Each structure stands twice: as C-alpha cells, then as structure tokens.
Image (cartoon, rainbow, N blue to C red):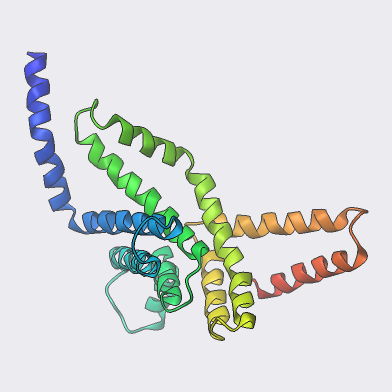
Length: 245
C-alpha cells in the first residue's frame, strides 16, 4: 500500500510542479531570468564561449528585468506624486534597476556582475528549493545539497556583494581619470550607494562601511604607520562621513 502511494505521489509530482509554475507566473519569470543572469555572469567571467560583451549585457538586462518585476510586485499603484517616488526609491529592487541600466552602456568590468549574480543565485536557489519540495523527497539530491550549501553561505555572499558595490566607486573614478568613464557616472553611482546605505532590508552596506572604517582606524593607529598615511586615513574617514546620507 505504501509503495503504491509513493508511485502515485511521484506520478503526480511533475504535474504539481507545473501547476505551481503556472499559478506563479511572475515568480517563474524571475526564476528563469535569474538563472540566465547567473549563467551569463559565469560565461563572462570565465571565457568559455561566445562574445564576452554579449554575456555581460545579457546579465545586466536579465538583472534589470528581474528587478523591474520585483519592483512591480512590491510597489503600490502608480501615482504621480513625490511620496510615490520616495517609496519607490526605498525598494532594493529599484536600486538594482538603476544599477543595471547605469552599467549597460559603460565599459565592462567584472566586479559589476558580482552583486547581481550573487542576488540572482540566492533567489534562484530559494525558488528552486520550493520546487524541490513539491517533488519526492529522494529526488534531485545533488541539487538539494547545492541549494542547502548556498543558503548556508548566504551571509558571506551578501557581505561580498556589498563590499563589491563599495569598491566599484574608486574603480569608476580611476576609469574616469583614465579617459574610459563618463563624468556623470560617479555622481549617479554615489546616489546608488546612498540608497544601498539607507536600505531598510539590507544592512550589509552599512556593515561594510563600518568594517572599512574600523580597519583604517586600526592601521593608522599603529606606531609603525607613517604620519602622512595616518593623516590621509583620518581625513579620508572624515570625508566619507560628510558624504554619508
């Protein structure tokens, strides 16, 4: 009787997964776009095949599509008012719409893909876990183990993504002085960093800035630190504090 029930459950599982996907069309679209984002990031960073620029732009475009859908889900009905746009600017997904379109026309940089690739991987694994729960418990053990492992490393990956977002700022400034960047990009990206710093759902940007400050203060307080480096470090901290929202 038990074997018959298990066979019936396995026979009905694919239909259950299909029904779940059909009932959650927006979630399914985001799941697909996130998988494409992850694969495009991998194919750009590791020159496996194809045109690298195509993979770079595809990753950013799919990341923008995912963020647009997510913003649509979380935001209220459109209103032409200041309150509506202020509420929209608080959504993390809106931040990454700006992020993706900001770098679409910019010179490709591998660190740009790290944040959107990490978020796409984490959310794709979460949705994959929901689909795996609809199948028989003993199926897809390798995929189950991979999703569990990624979820265990979630905090570390989120910290790395936030750190990359901060490090991108000096890289953008360096490219500007090298003649490869846009003069508007540092100012727009500064607004992006301000939105990430004040994010209500993601505290990792604030933690990264705090850790960087502690590191600089520790290094400059050592007796072996030259006086000019100590002065530069303290002035740099003061300068960043003035720019903080």
